Length: 322
Image 1 (tube, rainbow, N blue to C red):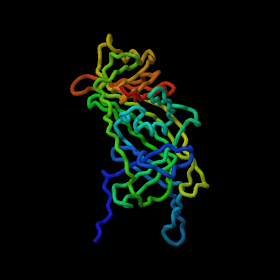
Image 2: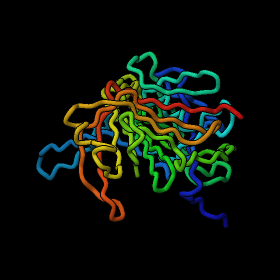
Image 3: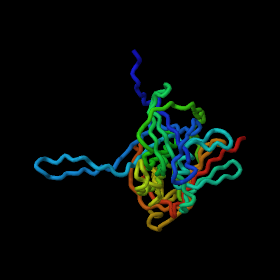
Image 4: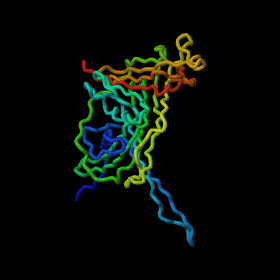
């Protein structure tokens, strides 16, 4: 008697590829498109309209199925590919989150763009956890655009990104075979020796920092699309915010309340790692808009937050080999 076909969560595989045509899902993905994430979450959300018509009995009519939205959440430590001109898997998701990529001498830079002609969308295939031939179940999502958040935990020494994508279903799940993939061996750059500037000052000592995209995107309606009833995804809102937990300092060292009262703005940056595994997070003009007293292991701290003026947030990945 053959063993039952079951799926093991830890054996899941996710492939993601930038679409060559913005509003057209890809039909072929390969093992080189792998995205290594922590427990990926894929969901399908059909619009269901129940019909309840009275008529000599309690109503129990067939519902009408509308557009079929789909989504995914991918969380991962942020790392480059660990080699020259290998920017890392997470940059595929950045390019489908309203970021424009530019490359100069092995340095890959990502800045938010407002031009629709520079936006990208992604196709994602999620393989359930069975590595036998035709043993996996494949979920396919197209026209994905991702919102994002980046957390820098200096207490643990690691940076982590969470990407939440919304797109459209590419059809019912099908059986398939997990392709051969090559997993990355690159180690995420440690935050231990990071160079940090908050509002243009290196005096503040952060315990943690967070950048959030505040991006809202949903697929548009396309009644002629026979599978999902949806078309391309567009970005309707983008508002980058930041927050940090820092040690409370004497006013002569760092005065956040005064900065709030004065409407002070300044640059922010965190540089971690060394090339070819070096990542820089930066805001050209950051405002600070809130301050709350807090504590960390009995030591007084401040929880501060603000926004990136004009979404002037960027990421640079330096892959230059020594």
